[in-house]
Length: 364
Image (cartoon, rainbow, N blue to C red):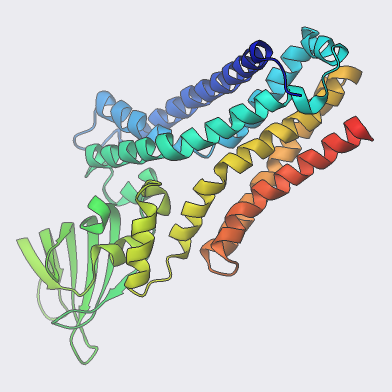
């Protein structure tokens, strides 16, 4: 038998307020530190202003906060359980004959709903805002753009074209791989002999051509020459560019399946993007695991004391799951283990761990 409707709504509200409060606190702290970091890196740049940096940070913080969601659910749930226990509300619930499984049901439901909303609504909105922050920040941080905004991998990409092979590096990727900023290209002729090095402020992908803006061309037998417009042939597609250079986190949940299909049709492995998609699908299960772990480290303590041990237990449990998640992501992103296994393993492990501890504590 589940809790009554009124009690379920009340308990759910307590958990929502605790989790949302921690989320807002994390948002404020991350925003503050992010603004200070952007001010430090871009304070002496042309086009810098406090308003511009504040807007850049405001638009990019939501995507950064995605990594914090599991921990806000974990510690928010612990705070809610402790609050209910200190107000003797859990004691009264137990005295009414309710089991632990009944009064953690609202918390599990809240975790599941938060997980679903974070994947289907929050993630697409956060990715859209991240793209807007990239557009606002374009050109502000120069060569450090990819390091500061964390949207581009530092990877050299080999490409072929009508004029021969070339090797490309970009500092920032925009428009799904169709626009690159801070571009360096080494070109070779058909015999593999080095021909020129081209550095450009911007590159736009056309029909088998990179259109470079504000380019400087360096050769071994002549002085550098500057061009307002320059062209280099390529057989790369926007999908191949994004697969090689772009960050998987910069694609929204709803667009990932199409991108994965395009990458596979182009003969690319797409491990990182498949892993990102499966990780998002598995997030509701991971948040349910966080709720169960919170219950396992707080309910027993609420009856026998030991707040410090409870907090330490929650931190250790969260750390174990975080390490497991990062390890499986590394293996899955490299194709060592299937991405679906890498994505779902932490959530399954967390649920089993929480259920095992609760069964041991409550039912012996």
